[in-house]
Length: 229
Image (cartoon, rainbow, N blue to C red; front, side):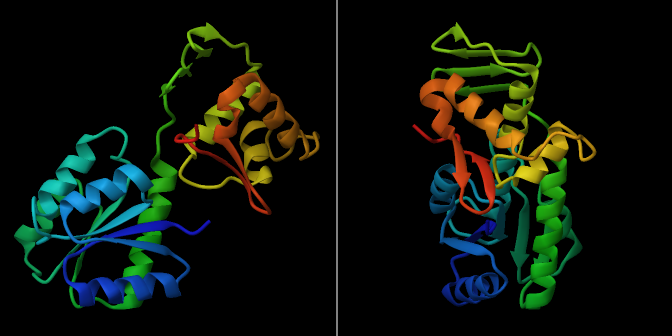
């Protein structure tokens, strides 16, 4: 699945150029011209990475970054700052606020794409597993190994709970059957790869109405969708 990149920049020419570069490199861009628009897009689309202009209108890029990083639900999103100024004080401020990188305009497309790739890889490898999940009437406590729907406990086998944990921990990307199999059963396990699908079907049934949160992505794998009704 293409990574979603949110461009937050009020300069239409720069935004258009950024969008073209991202599309050419198999990335999926979206655009916000103010921090208010950016917040709306973050809440609706949960981007994989944000390209953020330091001088964006309304609250400004630094304050917007600080707010994003202060929220548990969004602090995992990498933020790369874009600015026309190349001064040490700007770099320090951007990184202090939680920014992951800093690029000066005008930028080189190849360098931009390379930095985005590095930030995405780092983000995928550094996401800590959740301890609890709360999605409406669905409640999961990973530490206590308890799953409840409408406050009624649902029994999951150890493998089913581990499967749910893996899917939720990687909810910002699609996981192939092999990726799931290697994480739960181990690459050298003698079980067949089809056991992944069997366990997912069992897990969906046990989750009842919340089973649709486990989405099948044809030809690719599976993804946990928090917003599924």
